[in-house]
Amino acid sequence: MNPMHCVLWYSVSTFVSIKCPQGFVAVPTKNPDGTMNLMNWECAIPGKKGTPWEGGLFKLRMLFKDDYPSSPPKCKFEPPLFHPNVYPSGTVCLSILEEDKDWRPAITIKQILLGIQELLNEPNIQDPAQAEAYTIYWYDKHTLRVKAQ
Image (cartoon, rainbow, N blue to C red):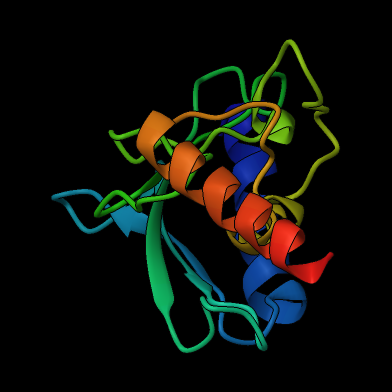
């Protein structure tokens, strides 16, 4: 087993056995021969309590490159979400998922999924990925601030 597969296998065992937050799912897919495909994971993120996302379970695919954990996985909602930090393709725009920004090899799958859950309700308006969703979000927030004055 190559070192990258060892890291991913460790991620599987720790996430599933002791570190899986309630309601979250993260499991490797299976190859046609029935073996685990450690490079392609099916995940689900529950909507956080007390937010408009509460009650939802949002499916996400996590794709790992051969040089993981040196490079971050690609995280993509399937189907894509209408959200300021999700590209129309479904790919998540989050600084901890970008090598040239905040990615570090020590970031865990749990931290990634919790970060994405937080991003759903607290978009980063400094780094929009979807113009229409950003405009609507900004307008709604601006309207609420004006009304509160």
